[in-house]
Image 1 (cartoon, helix red, strand yellow):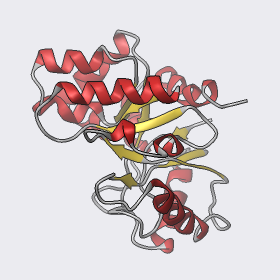
Image 2: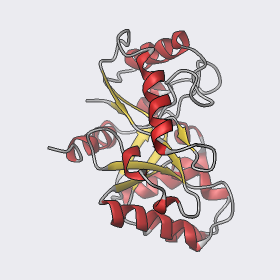
Image 3: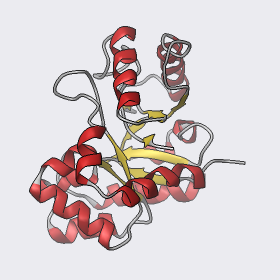
Length: 226
């Protein structure tokens, strides 16, 4: 089942969709591009939120605006959780996992690498028995040295790749390396709107081998809680 692992389709909760109408149009476009299962991942910044509980209330309210009208019936709620120092100690952090799974999507900061980033990833995985997905890992090539990137790649995580990476020679080469080394990879559009950050599964399906996309789809199934 073709699975969207990272997108901002919930209306009015972050810098993604600005309305229920935009959200439904984005979902319809995803469906046209073959998507049958969506993980909605609005941004979560610990320093901006009152609490995890308050964020979950906002997320549910946003989802309620589109849930009954969505042309894609299976939408799982998650979050794109920004890695901050002390994040692993935040009360309720485990509730930001993708609904019905042991997966949590974390986003590295856009800044030079520091060892505390790896420590937070490890602590969240170990303390809460979660499998970490690192969002759009290819975007950090310009921030990290080769040795720093290798530290990230050596973590026991799943690497999420934005479909857009296949439109860049440098990023595509990096992603192909991940695939060749049989690292766990999942794909997402990271769609925010219908303009410059639209759903772009058409790009991935033109540039990526079907068996690689299928392997991405199957990751979620392996992590569903029974």
